[in-house]
Image (cartoon, rainbow, N blue to C red; front, side):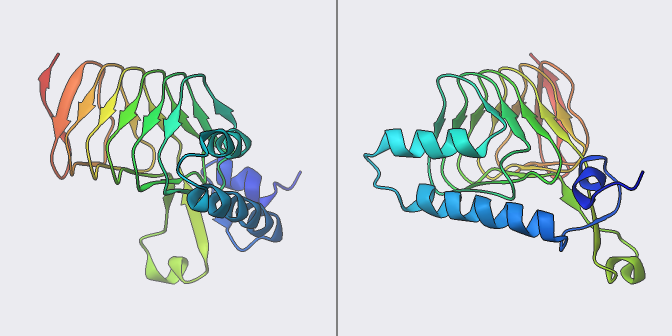
Length: 185
């Protein structure tokens, strides 16, 4: 059985993002994001309705401050009490799973998408995407970048400006570029 480009994308296999199904999905998402990011600041009900329509799962007690951006939205699963500050970007070309009680500072970037490093292969237009998991009770500092395939363990804090290229264990304080654990909590 031949896989669709979306099935390949979600399996972390090379896929073409120019596939008509994927393009159409992103266009729907972009219309919803436009409505979210241009909604009146005091119209929280409208903003929350749009966010519920974007995410695959969005637990109770969430607050996501626009502007917010993502590729698809439907590949994001979040638990209860999610707080996302302004200017967050989630490239959800693969699953992004976010636990309960996660807090993100401004300008956090969560990227499942990546490209081949070989220039000849990259020029073919293929991309890949690896899932990201963020555990429960996690704090992501301002401007943190979470790279493809990373897991951030429960009760961990990621320092502002960190670039998380490798998984972080539970109960860790991690900082830097590349991000590394500096102590356990």
